[in-house]
Length: 88
Image 1: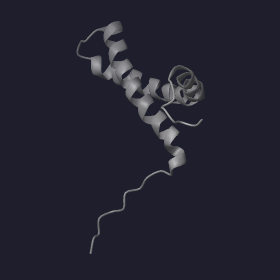
Image 2: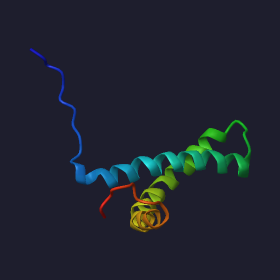
Image 3: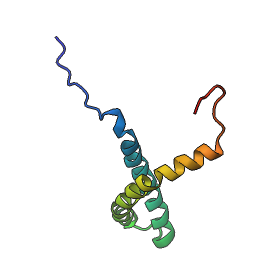
């Protein structure tokens, strides 16, 4: 008898939100590290300052990615050729 927990996943229609959540989190983290280093240097308090900036930047990034997603999809569609045989 297998008693392993069943992994919980979001329904497929939440994929854009999940993508936005992860993408904004990663980008906000990298940008916070870079901007903190550029603005205040790499001294002993660097990581604490970077994390403080990250906590402020992530929600803004998440909402921004959700807001601009339709525009980005449109721009990519206008920029990238459809694969051969693609109907759309």
